Length: 315
Picture (cartoon, rainbow, N blue to C red):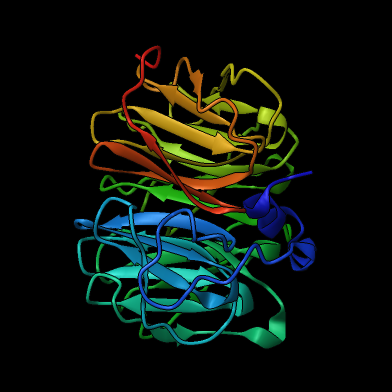
């Protein structure tokens, strides 16, 4: 069985079968009481922001120790969150909902939705405050060049394949990863797209840009591949198992962390060439990971889990 983020991205209808772990009490909650399904997390300055089921957005100002609700509209499940800087962030989800914040996540406004189309969005990335993309089910790709005031549809792939993850950089190069091994690259900030030869025909749920700018992709059955040359060639990465990988991040020190089903937490300190397992015994599905201070903060089917960033054997 795939984990919560994979369910959203590979077969979104199945998500509705997942039970609500528990409601978060109003006010301030500790990780042990945050038991709702959370699908993504991102840093916003010194704060952390997490999003998940029923449109809930949570904020932490103390490295994930305690959490509080943000002011957010609607109840559509949110699948991804991204901050371009400390103040300006975006969240996307079901009903093709796009939310924007300009105060570090405290308050959110609805800037786009298309519930009649039944096409959830799965990821969002912004090049700067004005220009960004949101991607999702059945090839849905939306672009804005005015900070989200208007959104235009873009055709990046002729097939109606789910687009699960997007990762870009300041050099104008953007990567997309999706179901059935779909991999694409843009070299001109999204004006045109090139389909890459894929090393795997199963779904990819994530793509990261490594410290050297090259991509790392990961997904079903623990499959992960890195490219040394911008996606022209792909090298398999040993992930020590077949648990589906749902999320990942590149830390400020260049370390790479991947998370997924069966409590999988993988850490690389050589640019994604080799990974070491950690967090053994955490029997749950993780959807996303970020770093805050001395901690790794993971979210997934049981809410929030924190781990120390440095552990013997991870170097």
